[in-house]
Length: 354
Length: 233
Image (cartoon, rainbow over all chains, first blue to last red; front, side, top):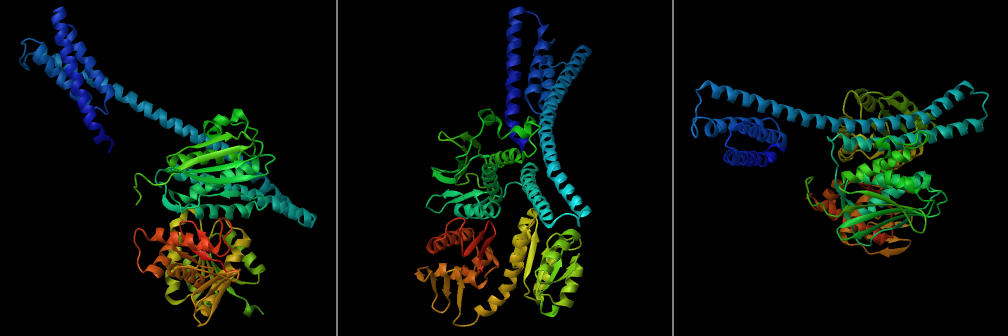
């Protein structure tokens, strides 16, 4: 796919570069009455071609054409091919070697850049993994510790103590479940094999399903919902978007200190559905705002955050929304509290899935 | 006596999960049989004739979907599927093959017991629904099958023919998740590109007429991307 798309511009570029080279040499020959510059300028042209085009093909083609052009136009006998004289053949061979090596060198350079970019994503993945493993260790230690303590002291612990420890084990396990859900979502996008499963989703059903799940875990917190009156269908991977909204609501529950109200608002703005999760809590510290969604990927999280799952939760949100071709934003509300919002397109412009 | 207890067959390969499901079910007065492999499950099913099957879809020896196919050839016993998140499409297939309900892993014990009870009730419901002159009730919703009338809190609700048919269909399969395709085939006969949207629009109207708000659906819950389920209590 990529190659055939690149074929035409590359060919055109080669042709134009060689023509310009040819003209420059003609011009210089008239100016200086000397031919020492000719091969050099051709090598320059070949170098440019190898540098700007994909693979070896155009570089080698350009060098062959250059050899023939030098032979034809700029060496004795002028304006005629002379492929027999040893001098010509030698110069042709040298020219070919020089251009091939230039081509090889630039190609390798390009490959190195690609490797570098891959290493960068690999590094980001590594950082995420490190952050996650660190985060997983804490609840696992607690679960393991509580369980062995209970087994070893089964008869000496009071019933209340048992129940208290068990409930903390259960809470830790639930936290791990949420973390794994988030990781699953990210790997699902990252793997590239399983693309987004976009389906037309009824907004009202999405919000209903979300609220039922949210209430199961946080029945003490009410969410004030406002939705458009009309029937709205949005193409999306519903499970992932539900997770984004769930993360944002949970984020508010855990981090918005002093929150009284939690809002989920969806409005239709032209061709977009804008989702907003707002709270009237403490808001987000200004210095964290710019890197809120990326801190786990770049590896500059404070190491003391033992429960930074929400940081990961937010990078997951950002990844999911990006995969939907949009962006998630965070800001502090002028009246206090935080606001997270993102917009999804109502109609898929390029309907590949169907 | 233990003979009066409902007999539940649990087909699950992980011993830890099996043991906790067994403990919870037994604590709730069910008799539990376990099978770690699909083949064993099929054998135990035919020899013990359980009242309900809890089936894990990811079994090592055979596809859990094959188990449903085999069982459904001879029996309408309720099947409750345990599915991991990576098996989303299998979930829909399982329901279309005749599974009654699914629970997504990881699940809580309360959820599991509620689903088991609901699935056991379903079999009783569907027997009753066939009788003439019967009435369906959930919460304050009443469906009168003979008069084709629906009332909420004593007030008649005016539904279109299609809306009534959908609601009646769901009520006849109370507690069971009905997939989009199952509902569409039952209501319109055949499926095309627009049918899911047609169904969704009808459901939105039904919800509006029954006075349901998001997060507070007392009669019909929606299973995102899968289908709908009429609640049974």
